[in-house]
Length: 72
Image (cartoon, rainbow, N blue to C red; front, side, top):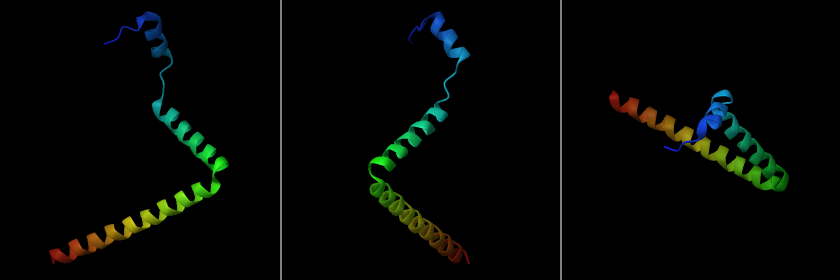
């Protein structure tokens, strides 16, 4: 374990870093940068992601229907 010293430990106790908020901020900044530099690429990625999500949803419900049908 690394000894960070009492002043750094006190600083970390007083101001805890919220990793979730920092991660969300980085994702928003990345998407904003992508939107301004390549809007067509972002739109195409969103479209293909939504299409794949729909296909996965259809496959899930088909599998559930097949499973319930096999039970009877």
